[in-house]
Length: 165
Image (cartoon, rainbow, N blue to C red; front, side, top):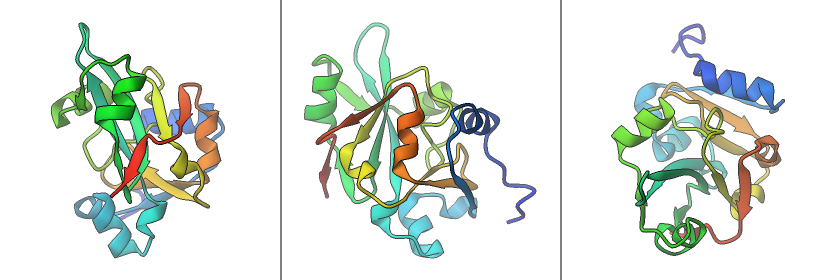
């Protein structure tokens, strides 16, 4: 894929610049955007990939949060996320809700540019030497040191947000 064609979503690029987030843009075939396929094809460790998962708390109006977990773990939505979101029933946002809220497709969702909702980051993400996040679309990824997430004003590091698979 040509680097001229694959660009970060404007809201993502603006966020990275606004908060001074040191990063490297990785380009990928949109067919390989899903984390496991991306890591296998491009030679990255699954333990260095972070997934952005949008969750919805059943309330009126619905409350959303973006959760960052390692690809080797599973978001603890039923216990930990539910506890953080005041005990409300929590579910994964549908692909339609995710796209409407973020403007991003599954496989490209990133926390950059989503500063209007809480960003919950599993503490295991912060222990990695580097992590890969979505680029806001299915043709880019962002490689960064996890400490860069702390620059986002809505970021909260949560112990036990995810559980091992």
